[in-house]
Image (cartoon, rainbow, N blue to C red):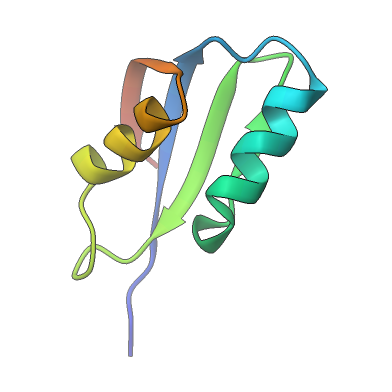
Length: 72
């Protein structure tokens, strides 16, 4: 049985609902919870398949900067 974990990212560059939609669609496999007000993303991931650094890289590939990240 897989053990999923969540990770919080504080992100620079989330400025509008189009940003939220872009992140939600592009990272849908990680069930992102994107907050426009908080400029943050909480994602669910499987540690045996992917690590937090790889999730950060996926966010940055979309054009955003990760300012902070922490497991939840």
